[in-house]
Length: 97
Image (cartoon, rainbow, N blue to C red; front, side, top):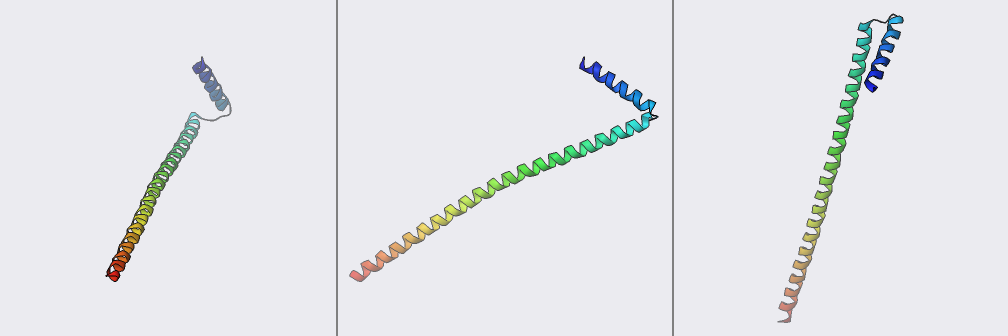
């Protein structure tokens, strides 16, 4: 029933346009402009969503890289401290002799 109602509404609108002197060509041109504008908006929305997803994924990747960098820095600091302790112990043991 919905389709029939939609057809009745369209038929009624076409009659209104015809009574106002609007040609079928003008109606079609307006419809195609509306379709074009809608398509452009859909493409812009899709592009914005893709950019957002890309930025989110890139942000996660950067966060992972920063985490790895912090871990590597902490590891280097621990290794440096251990090397300093070993050197200090070697110096102490050699000075006791």
